[in-house]
Length: 449
Image (cartoon, rainbow, N blue to C red; front, side, top):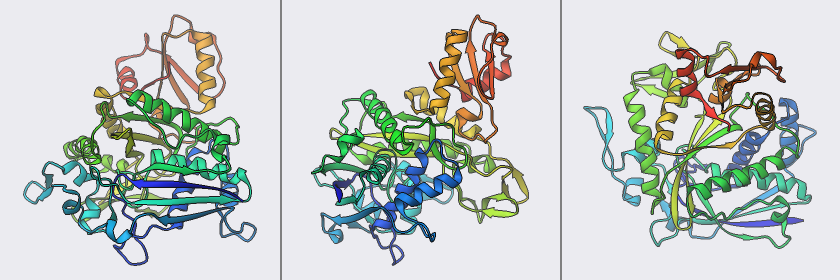
């Protein structure tokens, strides 16, 4: 039996509901569901049927020919859960915000956290406490074991993504449930074969970005069995993903999460009148007594995950916020958003505007891109010798469909029409683009050089 144990610590509050509503409960099924998500997010070549088959093979399933998970997961508290359970996030964490009923906005010095974690405070959800100064956050062990190391490698790749890109429990896309790996017991040296670094240290955001890029590439290679990966469109994924890290670290998680929370709160408040357009930040969205809903083939789609994740990373006794942008359709093909009698297709314009605000004063980096895109980039560079090469359109935004073309803008002296390129590719010369197209490229574009 191959076995590895991780010591984990909460660095932001963990909201996990159990059998009793509102009561915190950290159990293996909750973790396994998140591992499934991150494993799928790193898939880059399997079709839907193959994906389901391989996922069930590793993590178990309900089909007759599937059986139980090939990877066993146990969670054991290190600290006394009762002593680390909070019941009022504002009081227990020293966070101050209030709702102003006249202006209908949050006010107070910690309104950023209030906005990101508002539903948990509203529902008085219990939570596992995060680190507070010299006081450690709730600590627990996660033990992975499997008969075959190949299955275990896949689970560890997903766990790395969960630890460094995601979180556990409610509001995990808004900074809730972030953890740090503080120790590893690996008597069989399993991690050596994965080359994954679960205890990254970084002196600055450049080092942190490089560590994330390097380890995600390794994790994704494990999930894809070393095969070439492509753009994936059917669900939230990391086939093409960008990230922005806070320019400077903070000395507490509260300051870090509040900083990015205020940026998000201000933007959403300024655009609150864009009811349908704002829905792409995630459903449900309530306006008064009514909600925006998704509709597809007559079905109501009340919940859709946000393509943006806000995350706190702890390294060298400092905290950085990370904003992560995922790929994948927000709604299935021909799906629409509906509010009252008004409908429209999902529009990522507001996400682009918010993202551009973030990257105006912060460095954006490409977290990962599919090998198929890199091959195209290499082909374009060889044939056109561009001074600039920019991906734009749906493949850059992340809301592409299966048939969406790859839109690329280049600055080149070479005649584009004299060359052929593999796949559905639209290439435009920045020197010949009209003003409206240049505005689109400026808003959506991602430099690939």
